[in-house]
Length: 197
Image (tube, rainbow, N blue to C red):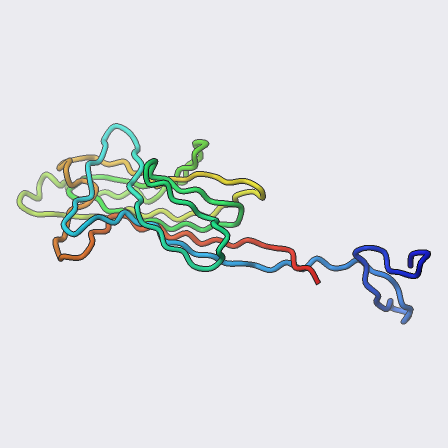
């Protein structure tokens, strides 16, 4: 106890093994707050996926964002740079992207500092042999990582393909009258906050 009869800061009263009343450290209790987001490359009805690149990795379009869970603006979408910013927290990202009439393709998650997480390498039968037909395949990437406390980091979903029909290599339109979707990226976040009592 302090000279004025108060408990020191961050202390609680408890009993020890002998039944004596003692001051103990206040335990740190953390609460896990979960948040979810979905990013998409969502085109107008009958809009095509776009042109791929056989020389280098390109950022896939991301133009749609919906979130659930916390309301602290933990994810921000930048459609101009085709990227998204994540605030501090523990993350799991699952992304999938289409490619049409390509022999091989792969997607990856890339952080702005150059760190990458590789996705599935996808190879099909030779697209050139499928004259008059359309073959769309998917590449998938899944990864977990931390964004340190106090930081915000920028990420993108990148794609590399072996191209055969450039104007639709990133996805061919279905033409159903619904929006065409060529990338879906689900982001799951958990952040731990200290609970005061």
